[in-house]
Image (cartoon, rainbow, N blue to C red):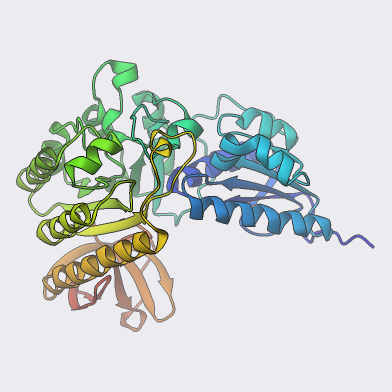
Length: 434
């Protein structure tokens, strides 16, 4: 006998991957809500939409496993229909249809109107900036551009997301104002490449122009920059960051490597010398800026000498935040023509060495914060602590400031002044002083 879902007529959107996917899911949910559909995020529903990631092997494996899990639930009668969208579906649709035929339909990254139609909804063009946010109420992602024009050899994003396409400043202001009216106080600007923003629309890099308009929005207190490409970085943004208190003294800039040989093969358009000069510019123009980066180890041809250079650079540069990925050999990328010649166990060992280094660096940097005062925002309450962040920390990936709940009630989304009294490598402990 067929079991009916407890959430009849509900559409459950499941999000995998990066913040750009979170944003896309929120737009989908906003469209569904505008069509009077009952929609939830990662709960129970009669219909399931899986927004997949197809970036690297681990992400693809997670996406496939999630699809198989919901197909199993469909076969057991726990859900009625399963739809798949996002990057994995864009990149591998023919293979997925063949290998997992029990999915009702697959959609690519640009097929939102078709996906909505399959869900019995109309695509409403007039919904500029309308989203159903899934993040804590005090912050939201603001995607300022789609796609990427960079030629990086290892990256499949252009295959899945297409060419760079900026949103207009006018539309972004409308969207950000709506978010502010809903209580959002922190905007996290995302794109595959923030530094390219505006070149297609305005024939110049217009990130500073956008920021100048965003800071005027009442209610927005922090604006944070994610995913800036190092080549062609608009340095005037740094000067504006220094003088404008709403722009967090924080930058997420994926640098990937420092060996000139590896950088050239990666087609990054930069060198060790240019990279170090850019970091010096960051720190000179914005004293105290927190720099977050990501690195790739095990890229084809990466020698022990290349890796030793990378390690020494990490030691010397002392990034505030750092993530490290092992190279993933992606078909249809330029690097796929190279031999994937670094053994998997060596890739993992190198990644672990980099992260162990960074753990020591983070611990030392955090010790320097003890006894200092910071302005923090409360994201949530977890167990016996309120979990907060400084302007130097992005959600989910950076330091968290833990404040004992016994100290008294703190409101989510409110800002407080705290004194740091203890520090670990990735957590700070504090008490409220104002």
